[in-house]
Length: 231
Image 1 (cartoon, rainbow, N blue to C red):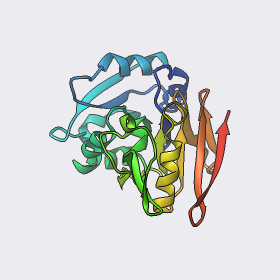
Image 2 (image 1 turned 180 degrees about the vertical axis):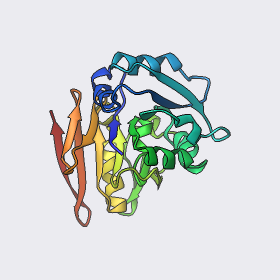
Image 3 (image 1 turned 60 degrees about the vertical axis):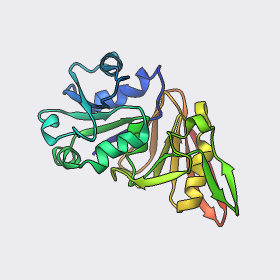
Image 4 (image 1 turned 90 degrees about the vertical axis):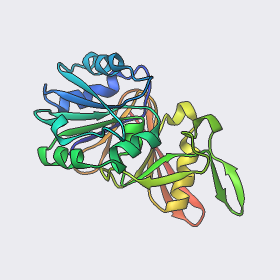
C-alpha cells in the first residue's frame, strides 16, 4: 500500500494533493468517527478541494466498524481525525477485515491526525505524563493527552514500522514522541499540521506541504537522535 500520513491542520489542501493524485481519479472512502461533532462536509470538501471527484464519508464506531464492503470499487481509503483512542478502538479492536480488503485491492491509504497516529504497528495514542528516571514527567499539555494521563502505546494498523505523533510544531508533541521512543526502543516521526509524510520505494521520506516531519530514533541508553526534514 502507498501510505500518506498527515499531521492534521485546517489548511491542509496541499497536504492532500499527493494522496488524491495517487488515487488516480478513483473514488475515495473516508472513515470518520460517528459522534455528535462529525462534520461530513469538512472531509468531503477537503478532499474535493485537493482534486478528488468522488468522496464517500462512512461514519464508523465500535458498534459499526469499517467493513470490507465499504471499500468496493474504491481507489483510496482515508481515515479522518478526532479522538485517537476512539479511532483505534473502532478501526483496530473492532476488526480489521476492511484493512485486509484494502491491502488485497492495493488501495492507497491516507491518515489525518488520528488516522496517522493509528497507522503504525505500535500506535502512540495519547497521554500527557510518563514515568522516567524514577519521577513523573509531563510530556505535553494535559489538554492534548487524548483523554489519557499516561503515555500510551498500543497495537495499531501495522501499516508502518515506526510510531507517529501529529500536530508536532503546533501542539508541541515532539517531546511526547521522544519519550515514547525512549520507552519502546522504536523509531518515530512527528508530523506538523498541513503536512503529509510519505516514502519513496527506496525508503526516502517525502513531504507535501509547508511544515516539517521530525525523525526520532534511539541512539543509546536515555538518548535519541533527532533529524528534521523539510521541503
